[in-house]
Image (cartoon, rainbow, N blue to C red; front, side, top):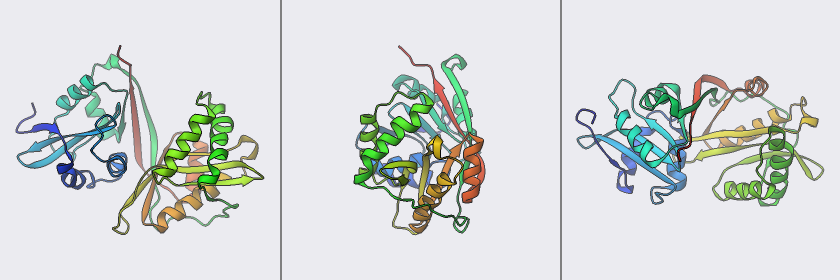
Length: 282
């Protein structure tokens, strides 16, 4: 056990202490913050948090969303990473995500053979006032009437190109879930077909102005309609909406073409985002 630290499962009574900890560095903990607000702490099959305490003070935490993990502690402070790793092994894990400075020390407590892949992407954010002017090409916020078109776009026209096997019905349910969870999607139509889209994958709103955060993903344009600035337009419209609500946009990318789109919108580089995958255990 790490010196002078007590580890236990966090409960709803610990929520404010947890928020005070992870909101110290919201860019590092965007998924932890968004998931806590979206799902709460009452469904342990979906989402749980473990905390390390020095006396009554919460000094480190580990989030488990199903079998996906994130850890956080203020760098320079001791953290019970070996104990957190033991908990994760017992519960089962498939992924660990976060900034490399937090993920790599956590991975050091696992058998290297159990780690299937490490993958780093560039991590960007869009500060207030940095959004570049853009022709929105008719980009608009999607609603319930757009669900079928979004499912067709992502299942047939986008993810099919990437070799994904997700069905249109699964994409339709995903679109419904996103809408009901308050996620935001912007899209561009040509006729009755969506030809470009972008949406938030994690979103936290707050009543405190300027305190919201959002992760953006699934930015795509049909191959037949690329090089017309449509992804830039969708992104610009989505980001204008977010910034107007006091929500700071973040994203990560590895495709240089995508990076050029985000540069045009006004995003700025803040480092790396890391995903580590683990071999599935029998």
